[in-house]
Amino acid sequence: MAPEAMAGQGGDAVPGPTLDRLLSVMGAGALELCVAPRGLGVVAEGVTVLDPLDRGPARGQVLLAVGVDPRSAAAVDAVREAAGSGAVAVVFGQGGSGPLPEALRAAAEDGGTALLLRTAWCGWTELVGALRAGLVLSGSPADPAVSAVPPGDLNGLADAVAVLVGGAVTIEDLESRVLAYSSTKEEVDELRRLTILGRRVPEWRVSAMREAGFFRALWGSGDVIHRPAHGDNPERLVVAVRAGGEVLGSIWVAAAGGDLPPHASDTLRSAARVAATHLLHHRSHRSHARLAEDAARALLDGRGSAAVLTERTGIPARGHCAVLAVRSGASGRAEEAAKLCALLAVRCGAYDVTPVVLPVDRGALVLLGALHQDVRRAGEQVARTGAALVRQVADTFGPDARIGLGTVVGTLADLPGSRRSADLALRALLSPGEHRTVAFASEVAETIALNQMLDTLTGTGTGTETGTAPAPDTPVARLLAYDAGHGGGTMVRTLRAYLDHFGHVPDTARALGVHANSLRHRIGRLTEVSGLDLGSPDARLLAQLQLRLLEREGGQD
Image 1 (cartoon, helix red, strand yellow):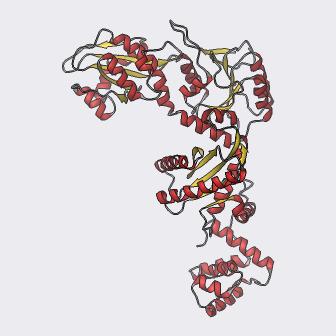
Image 2 (tube, one colour; image 1 turned 90 degrees about the vertical axis):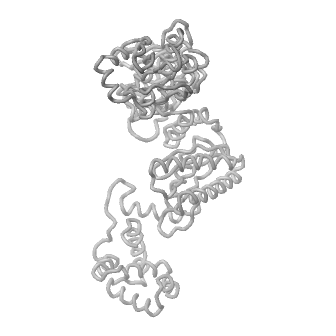
Image 3 (tube, one colour; image 1 turned 90 degrees about the horizontal axis):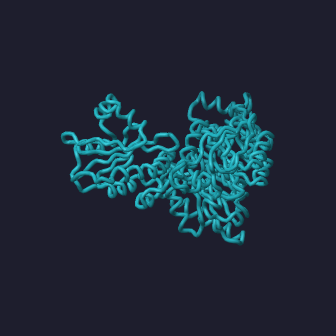
């Protein structure tokens, strides 16, 4: 095993970061927690790449199982050996889709070793760097006023540093873009004004500093760099923000209304250590809410852990819960998705349920926890919540809003089943001719069964495509050809309405807006053109199925 990083070493020894702190600092965009048998408070002392040819001690290490398929027998062996050597966690790549094998989970539970998955969009190289940075952030604490700023609040950090150093502060990334700046009542110099207005250092200034080798000196230095006043530009201090050897950005302080105090450099050094946490938060765009969201998504996808979700959200692992599948009817743009999730989260809070809202394609999933202990009352809660939410979503996004209600289950671990039933119910509500806006799967069971039958006929359930055009020389195919030649689609619409109304002429005539005698003439004509035997149950069933397939593909109005 080859150690890639160890905990930070400073003048004052402090405990290494816990697994929870690592996940919080890095954000859940890099790691997905599946099993944590000893909780998230275990201390991680370093990160190590698993080397089958060098299985040395790994006490306190986070092991990266590079190249090991988590669904293989080798993965189970790796977890057992990691537990035996004292590792706190093992990280695998995704290795395909679907839930992890129970044998792998059992090995982690038995050995007391946390089990994590590397997300698909984070490579191993990026992961090593992020873990190294997280470990180093266990260094010495800074000034309490700086340390007290909530993680990720870059503007709060800039204001806190500005108060301590008595100057105007900007926090910038590696491309000299402004991530945050302090508010100040003092007169600011023109360069700072242009930098803040443009949200980045002016290009001419960046080019000049680059040509002078300033950035090379800044990124290579471990200390504060002093830039004396020059012309209209006041005195400035700048320090690189780094963690585990990785440079994350910089903090600039400009004198405002007077000289900078003698202790400004020491304060800036201390602030740079704390700023690393904030910049990592900014880079990963993750907060506690997003960590809870990722834990819920992993569980609903069959990969996650109920215990982790409980720890992240406070929702009890045992107790009635359910999933709602929401479709807003909007276009699905990012801003609309964010608006939908915010609406659902706020509104759920008024209905005595504990929600976790997850954005999905063209909608959202809502996990409802801590429902009533009586299953019937819990079902009523879900129904009331869904009915209220669909009205509010429709008021905001339009009348096409629909919500599928998942079955009430007894534990968080059973939620994937509730999610499947919610998805099925939502799909049924979106079917042609369905006017309800909210329903349980049991209330639209016939439509669900029909959808499953149509999936089988079209091959969508098996991953094959057979097409939805009616087989040639069938009555519906002949009607389609006739309508294509004569225009208007009259014959197909007439047959669909006639079958939908069980052959009842008055109801069919009203639906089509024609006189009953005209309908009878049209029915006679379509049977003549198509050869359809309306007296045959098999012929009627085949025609109905073919028409449904056409509706699904939007082939007919």
